[in-house]
Amino acid sequence: MVKIVTAEVRSGLIAALRERYKAGSRHQKSRILAEFVAISGYHRKSAIRILNGEGDTATYTPARGRRRVYDDAVRQALIVLWEASDRVCGKRLRALMPILLPALEHHGHLQLDPVIRDKLVSISAASMDRLLSEARTGKQGRKPRKQPSAVSKQVAIRTFADWDEPGPGYMEMDLVAHGGPTSAGSFAHTLSFTDIATGWTECVPLLMRDSSLVINGVESLAAGLPFPLQGLDADNGSEFLNQALILHCASRGLEFTRSRPYHKNDQAWIEQKNGAVVRRFVGYGRLEGVAATEALGRLYRLVRLFVNFFQPSFKLKEKVRVGSRVVKRYHPPQTPYARLLGTGVLPEPVLVRLRNIADALDPLELLGRIRQMQEELALLSQGRRPPSPSQRNGDLTSFLAGLSTAWQMGEVRPTHHSPPRPTRDWRTRKDPFESVWPTLCSWLAVTPDATAKDLLSRLQNEQPGVFPDSQLRTLQRRLREWRKETAHKLVFGVLQEGEPIG
Image 1 (cartoon, rainbow, N blue to C red):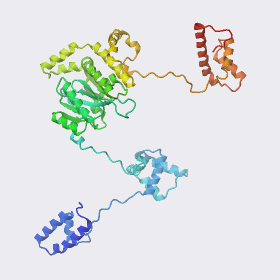
Image 2 (spheres, rainbow, N blue to C red):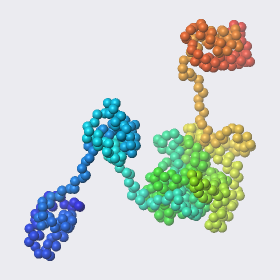
Image 3 (cartoon, helix red, strand yellow):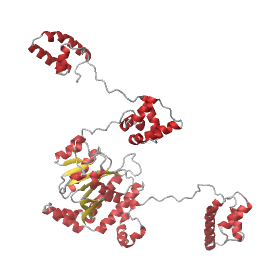
Image 4 (cartoon, rainbow, N blue to C red):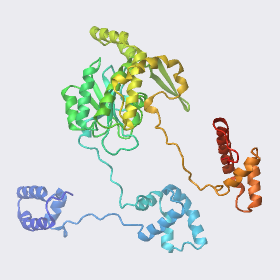
């Protein structure tokens, strides 16, 4: 029943209309009844009974809920049994109850009232979960489900299975953070895009995570693409789901969609490029400030040419489940540039311009310049000042000359080098042989070929209970250092007679 007026107003209205309704004609009763139903909110049949005076229904009485079956005593006993079962779920606890309850009673851990015991034995698994919900979460009541915002309701959802072979121009986008080991403060981000049809990838650096900068990045992307931008698909971040970007896409005729929350596979294409392009070339260091963002932009201007013209990638052709296995078949690897030429949708002037760019590009020169920019980014992420361009003039020549032996150096990307660890020159524990080391040196001067095991045995005989067998490894390390120092002195210096060794 809808509550339109208060109970007091409804009671006064009934008292005023009841006599008029009883004494009125058929037409008058119909008019009074219609007005009373509209004002009071009663059902028409209920209003007829009330105005006719059938029973004391002048005051509104809310419907009573279902009678409570399990009181607080049952709930407390159930919590004890739940804890004794190591907090299993309701279905498992229901199956365990005939075993657990008698066992606790047999060993004197639990003495229950027969009424409570009967209720515990007959309680259902769903009722157990309901009574244990507060104990499980530590909060009263069920956690409210997060409702979608008004902005997200304006953007249609597109899953990974909804693309259905689109043409060039439909792109997924994502934001990659360059905060390093911490997300505190302000740091640079990368706004990455990838085309679903061709794999063409573009990256735009952002000084910070901001929705207005995202719009600027979209405009920069649209101006530099070799094909018209048709649509964008983003995740549910606030930098994407906002009124400004929705209006921007609508004003330019772009189809704007979003993935499902907590379903990363809906954006599988861009997630793969975040690792294969952004993290591969930039790494995981922290980049902050205008200088780092500008260096990131210079790197991406080289990366877009190297990746799109000289980096073949696979594209899934079909996926078939055979029993318990999923068999995937792929198209032959192609560069995004080759796939774009194969679509046949580009006008001739654009094709000519792309072919001229491809003919003029030198992949080794591009890679050498990328390595230079990676070195600059690595220095910036460590808080160091990169060298000036004039100081890097000879680096490209040495890079091209050293390609045949670069594999011997291991990791060659400067952005993936770990910072050098400081040399450890301190002890974490006290040296157990510090007090007897002069004695050991005198023994070694007489018998320099003595082993650590012989020396430890001699110490144990002279000082019983002081040096256990577990210190043999420590003595072996000390003896190895002594032999190294002694060999160094014999080669680079002459030991004076009577000078102690070590």
